[in-house]
Length: 314
Image 1 (cartoon, one colour):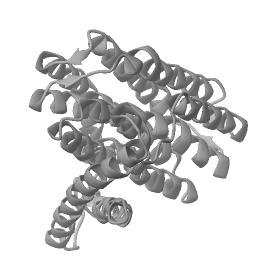
Image 2 (cartoon, one colour):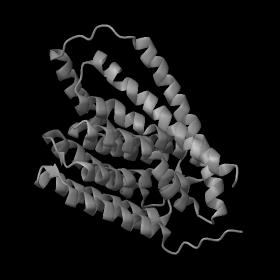
Image 3 (cartoon, one colour):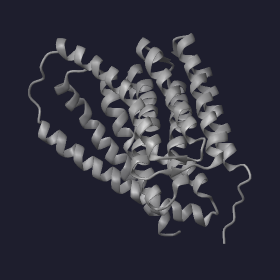
Image 4 (tube, one colour):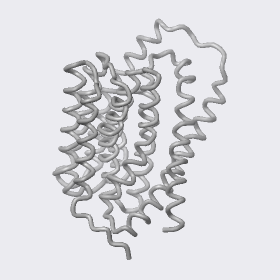
């Protein structure tokens, strides 16, 4: 454990630094694409901030930890939807645009509901993976259509060094993959020393660690008063993780699903998504009182994970 703790922390640092390196180049690349911040968020930022969830869950599944892999997907989405969204709105109430209210919030609930239905038989198979990836495509194409309309009227970007942006982007992805591998390897060693199960490891250690990039991006957008980027990133990341990431992982290796994921964690994720949708569609603002409700739901989720857990150091 003496070696694992600093290497686990270093893995999170690499994960964060790699994601930051990627995301700092996204605006430069987006200028060449000539699209809006929300489109950039959905098509690029959300995908990039979901790389940690994908890599951590992939390494966990390859290490024969399917419960940790699925737990990380569900847990990370829950952390992002409740804790990250709540912290951002506590800092500054968020005005919610019509696209977020009408498209992203509904797709997020659909993604969680579909994952629940497919997991009810105790395994997410390759066929289920195809269904999940196919379900993501209409959302992707609708966003792409928005981008095409915007490109038609946007001026052509000039200057800059796109080769440098691409190089830093690739280096950032490499840091994300390395950091994710260290989190899986050394986080597992720490948690097993504490007597944790694979499921508990996935929904706590991995889920919170891989949600740090989403927290950084969303909170940064709040500070810059970019409301669409804040909630757009949270929703789009959840949609991409719940459909595309889970789907691709199952195409690589089918994942068994523990009963607690089906009976407790996924239903809680759906309920949290419905509550947040009510908040953003009724008042058209996500205010501090509502943020406290979402953080309380996160605390309830976390307490449910540790219910019955007995710390048993050797």
